[in-house]
Image (cartoon, rainbow, N blue to C red; front, side, top):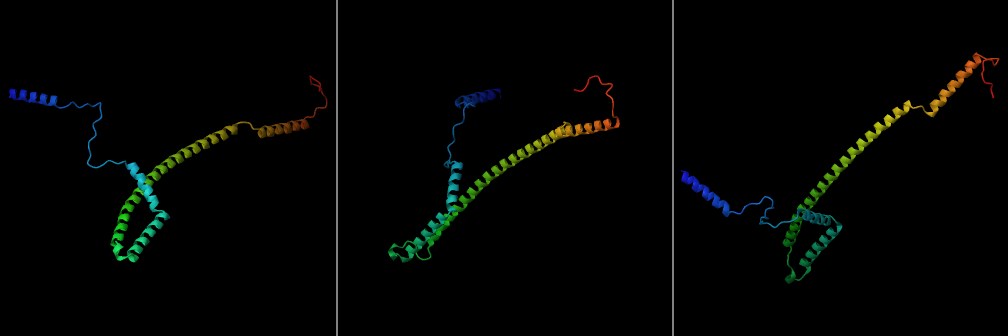
Length: 189
């Protein structure tokens, strides 16, 4: 048994020596893929351009002209030059193929637009939250200033206090008129 363990260990060491050492500080080599790689962002931009074109009047005019020319050619051209007879099966196939490609491209473009709208909505929501927080902060600051100003003597308040003091002094003078000027240390100037 001990000989078998030793033999197994030696085989293990040989296997480790024969295999290349995997380095963890280097990126792995790219695996070959069966399907070609593509850039989803570039494909999305292309699908949006196609979807925008499919939604224009120019596309409708070109599509209408194509169908009219197709039908006109296959009805009025000599029989030997016609390539799609009356039920226009090939035209139906071409229009079906165009529709089968247009629908997913339009959906892809709509999904990308929804993603952009979602991001914009989230950014607007965050901006609104910041604006509300700023407004609430400014409202609190204004309230604090008003409370602080309530304790500060304003010009109108001082004026009214001085007027009240003048009236009070006049009333005292009327109540206690002094006929002689005794008791004054300094004569009036």
